[in-house]
Image (cartoon, rainbow, N blue to C red; front, side, top):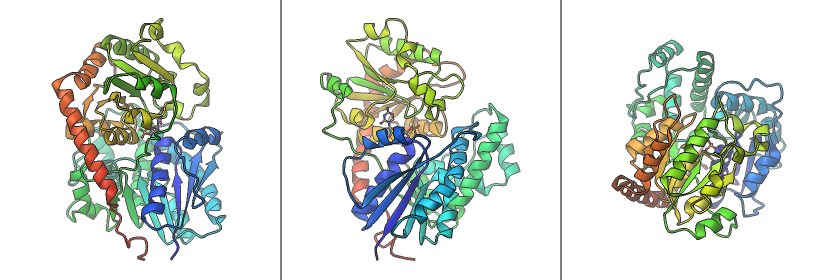
Length: 459
Ligand code: UDP
């Protein structure tokens, strides 16, 4: 039997990267004849330029297509999850016609967690096996399906009391104070819908592996715990799905890193769209300067209300980010640091031996990229499930120090303290040891694919 897999990613590099990696895995390890990846985006040229850098091979069996979405006139208010869910809903007719237009009818369909409505399209098109790829943690999947199993009133009452949600067999999840109740209700409704739709899939793949989330993974296998909530839908951990660094890549940052001592540089980046406020940007600059440590900082124009706004705000990409740094900062730090506008080759930076720490917003891909390169983190979560990830890497895995992101700004003294803790202190040495151990488990996990060999052939 010839397998043709169709994979669909919702907008954002954080979804595109693991979907593309999974596509490669299906071709290389699971005997697929062909893989077609559809990347939904509101900006094809930007997505193409970012993705272009992540794909070196030209393989006729591996086809990548973009689905250009027109979001003008759409209500894109609310949280990032709500926005992406609205965008993916709008993309459904295009996804349907794109799949129908394929020469070879696909036998396997995979969509990320934000596009679960497309599972119904796959069913209508009679695709034999339908799956969800969770591009974040198994713990977040657990939260999503568990929330869907509760009735709305119980859930809202529970969350507004700000108590921790006790997910069967997992670490509890603590919720923040609700800033905007209207948006919160919309986000919860979307989350519950997604959780319910996950259960209509034939299987769920998660970008994680046993040593990163042993407790949650066990709970998904335990009939008394999450296995019961999943109602028989199998969950496979397939991670780490991380783009390998390109050894030949040339970039100013990498040339600069070549000149620095081993594990001496702190890399600072808030993902593909994360931004700080103007005041916080200045405070971070002052903190880095004061720390006296070498750094590479991917600077983005500030955002005042919504730290994820620059993900879909094209005007932000035309603003000069360096204008928001303190007067004379670049000059004063020219011998110790490098600032990069908006985007840097993250995988290659983390893989470079001069990189010794990572100030990260804890997007799941960034967390995994840090682990597979054995780099301890300073966890500075901004939005979505990043606080859960930050908690996991600092409290559970002990590979990160966590910034206290309350309501105010993080002061330069705290930034100095965090950098020192990870780069100089005994605690940092312990974190470095732990993350290097975890790196080894990632290498082991990649050697043996967790999807059973006959999985795709069985009906
Ligand atoms: N990324 C990059 N260069 C940058 C910023 C981000 O290559 O300057 C990549 C990063 O390596 C990761 C992805 O974009 O693969 C971001 O995913 P993540 O889940 O960390 O965060 P998100 O952008 O989804 O918030």
